[in-house]
Image (cartoon, rainbow, N blue to C red; front, side, top):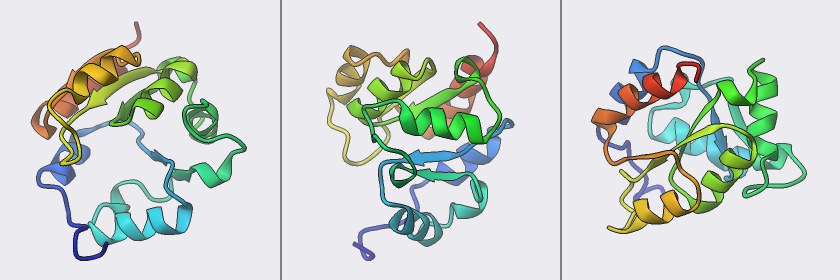
Length: 143
């Protein structure tokens, strides 16, 4: 896994452009999640706001993890924007009452992955890191 895990091109630049509070809320176990973020050089952009499903009773597609993260960051769910590349994550974000950007820039995303995320409830699809910060900014405005 270590050999295959590498920084995603343009991820750091895109994340740094996000001028609001940000966190990671992942189904990955906490120890592994922190190691992965450290390994790819992104942990400093989120630490200490790193939340794992092992902090809640029910993982995705239940909304528990996203609601836990919002509470920990003193944010109301309708103020939150979720960037999600999985169907279960999209379902969880919408169940939490959050706006959800379906993100398909990962190597694991097939050509029709965006359609699956839209069918699961994603509000929009963003296909690359260049467009991510602008989409977050647009969705972060109150509606």
